[in-house]
Image (cartoon, rainbow, N blue to C red; front, side, top):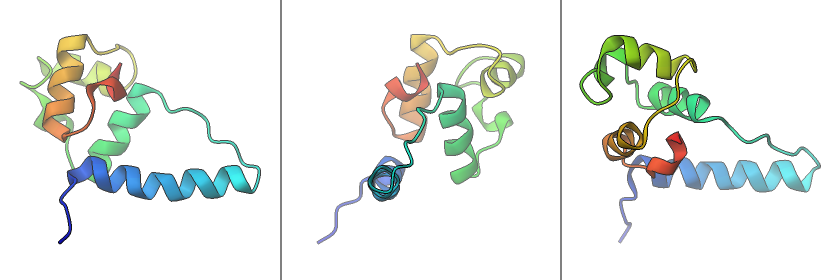
Length: 92
């Protein structure tokens, strides 16, 4: 019986193979910024900025967060984590 780990499980499963391979052949991976992680998760889940309005305040704030001009607050990070079913620490 397979367990449903949601988006986070799929992301971590695919990321583990890439990470192991890249470090074994000498290609260190840079740490992604919270903005880059959010952009990746949005792209992978086909989420638009407008879908996040209400989750992390107004469209202006969403735009600034997605474009890296503003960092997320702890409350916003928790809301994003709940929405995407991932750890909120990815967005801090």
